[in-house]
Image 1: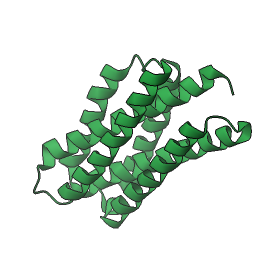
Image 2: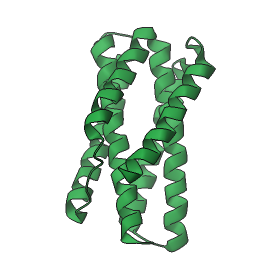
Image 3: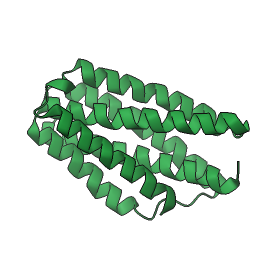
Length: 173
């Protein structure tokens, strides 16, 4: 696998972890620390911050440039988190379930690509570890009532579409 492909993977994964921290920050800004699922969201946010820190360090060690859209993802992530929390606790959980479903798919595709080439065991190990955390977040969100959110299929579909677009854009810009 080419170095540029590896850099693209690292860049988009760091952007995704950054976006996740911003989504949870938006949710917690609306819900506070006493709202339904606040403790669970805070725990997920802490894990995402750890993922981001590891990708930040990897980017620095490997001289990978971040996405130029980081300021946009900062605002967009916070707005998505706050907006879904304003709809209600189940909508906040629907947001988490939708985002994590797309991240699971994305990380699985990356692991398949890395396995084909036998490249970069460090990156593959990080992705595999983080994918398991993302799956736990998705499952927790579903257990907390994500599917009871108003217009869940539409809300989930729109969020998943937005995630797929963000992934493609962040890989390139």
